[in-house]
Length: 158
Image (tube, rainbow, N blue to C red; front, side):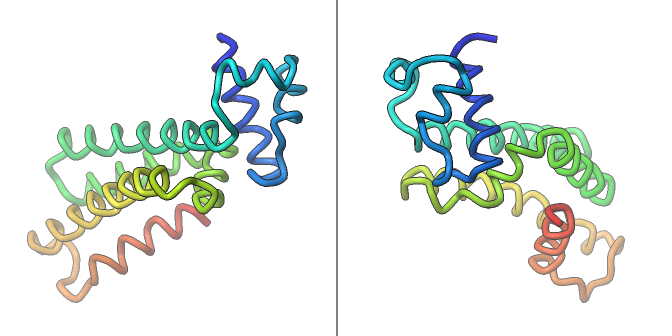
């Protein structure tokens, strides 16, 4: 693992344990075993680290969801695979997931907008599968797609 990857990994651990505001760059430098000033050779600031974590998480899930959408034409199977993909991430990368759920407010408006676009895409892909399942008579017509989407992701996040 190169130094930058070590920094990202340590930042994920610290932000998850202490929260973004509770973790300092000094804490991070100690965790990585370098001087605080040396961190600036790799990253501009703490928010850049946070944004990287969000992109790393969001883009990985987004890529998997898009692949599932492409490879899986049956809507119920697609929903099942979306849920499995999302839950797999929740279970295997708990610290990054915790950050993804709790620290979005700490991003700059521009960075938050990019992360929210990823979240919106995930929601729209799930909603699209639910709509298709309704159209094919696989789920009741009275199911509200938006509510079902929120319920699915909410249950996974719980």
